[in-house]
Length: 639
Image (cartoon, rainbow, N blue to C red):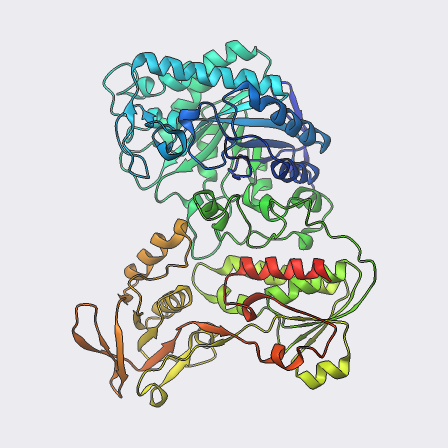
């Protein structure tokens, strides 16, 4: 692919090899107190070598009181400079320029991490509900100094530039937004006053780092879902003031509970906030960085149309760090696609894991130990099952030099990806199946569809290694009369294999059940979803769960958690509600989405009869695409 993305570009005197920017994305790969780790260095080095022009290192706290994340990178002290300097050197070795985002969480900082009450322009609670201390004018000046000191450290560490984080509801943005700034002094009220803190930071940092050092800020082009929030008109004027204060570029993002960058759409929409970048571009003469789920094709159009000067591509570079190189060489089919599952974003706020993960890239944050190396001895490998786990295991094993054959019992590859991509808002999953199939073709994996493996067939084939990715079997709940009703499986509904009546009851309120309900509601069915548990769709990521459930309600789906199943009659499903009332839900069709159980039959039959067996994916335990891909990848490495 040729065009605007590959043209060199400069921010002040910082020369970039192309116009692709890796935006700042919190990884939580640092130590507990914020030092750079080997994991951090491997992650950034891989993406620098992958061909981006500029890497903006993630939100880095400028003062201990501003820490908003566990394992957040730090620049609040001289002790962080050696590690940051090593990080810069690796990014430079990869051919990219390195900037760093300076961050203060304000009211979003967490006292459990800092041991201090958060601070903010006004004493309004943050997203976690913690009420901050209102900053005095003197304390505002101190925080300006914190940004200055951090910028000097960044320059001393060798960074080519710094970005001030003035977006996403953190300290600078809390001053900018009328929804979070209720002050009545010179830092509150009209837009000029609300922008005063940002302007003071820019001017002070500019004076400290010198006239030639690249400095820019990230701002919201708009706050979505908040009537008092920042408008595009506000953003344009803020950008003008930032430029006049000394900013060399403006990075335009978005924020708010309905920001399209953090939600899905019925069909995948690239560059969901490009109009915000275009709006800011009209207001300033310095370069504008556009961001927000921008595909390379959309990025080319944005540059050609003059709506921005640089294109930030984030999650897609998590999924495939070599995306720029592959695009530049015309190898689009070799790009591992981001499926916009938002699980990496959920990991940022999770206390159960340290470091973000990716559903389609098992090497994220483990780049060094996950390299695909040629095996010492080529083996005859049989993979049973053509879902994501089986295909990924076959791909990696073949790349390591093994002779790989894959048997799939159905007429097409994809497994549960087929059903998953059929649900509303899930078309973004389809490219993953296409990518995996294309890779198997290119590297010579022998694929046999319509071939259901038996123990005898495997014994006759005589492989040295068998990888079982046989998936799951539906769980059938014990409900009286269920065997006499018009009952279908959720998977068959999503694949349009069965007919469904007008009135439908879905038994099972987890992800599959709720997705099937939405699928049917869009076809005009009257749908009720029931489950024994007290809440629906608990396995949906926190970033999308509320949005998902609200869509169901908007489409008329009735949600009945906390029920007890009594029986199925010719009229429908009889339940006892959580209030203790007996109720018949009329239904022409009952859809089962009550979960699944691992399909271990083949494993039990061949155990001990082949030299090496690996069970992966849902046939170990029903889980998500991320676990399927991860286990497939590592099975391929082990062989």
